[in-house]
Length: 334
View 1 (cartoon, rainbow, N blue to C red):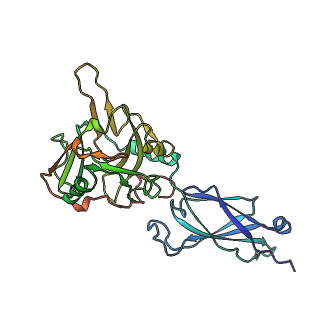
View 2: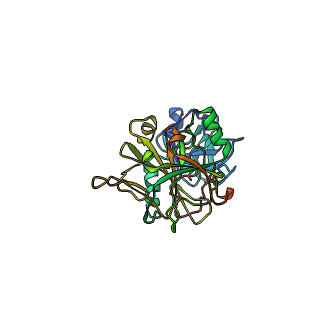
View 3: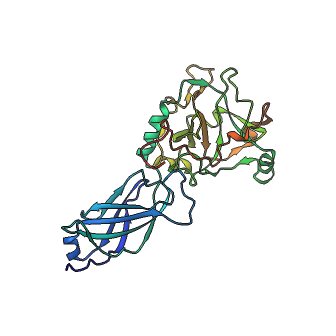
């Protein structure tokens, strides 16, 4: 009778990405020489809010031929970004009759997958370019909010709209969600008027600021996300960060940088002749969500009542991305 296999020990996880990791453990020299297969038991960590678009609560058992360790485990069909997992391993020897001699399961170890890497953001960017449409002129950035928000800014913040932590809306693997602070603005205009929409999903008051305060040659522009919420229209998230700022430093190693004068989403064109004004344009076929990473003074713009309705059903606060959309998903964890 074959000697039993020892239990794998000292499990270590390394080189973790949004949809892959490497795993290594200690085995005796004898077991290393005779093991033919490894069994990997991978499941979401219990008592956490799952990414509801994945195989929720279903353990994934992987069978792999024995390879030199560390062993790579990858697959976007069962790994999601920013998700906590539990993993355990068995070693096995395949017998002549097809059965397996197996070790005991190792201790369970936990790890968390990472954010989208730059290469994944570039894939999203390439997809977003195909949906951007033509460029339309605009002159103001605007931010819709409730009266209480602006009262708080005036009374408690010295008239400064301070950056807030980006929520979890959009792609699950977005590097800025829960990590980058900023103030969100819109700049989309209506086709017939060239002005901001009359309606608002976020509140009955609108702060408007001349575009040049946020978009100028001293600003760095980054692409951050492309998503939809089970709707025909899509959202593109952009980040505006003053060059050399903390926000710029955060984005520079995590997000694709865009050329201010030449990109499909948001452009600044310097005056060509003395006396001319800069030209500002936005993409017509996507909804832009623009995150400015520094405080914005209210006295640089104006606050007015919107002329339309407040449409709360259109809010994107903590909105989850449609994982089935072929337009805005890429082949990694959603």
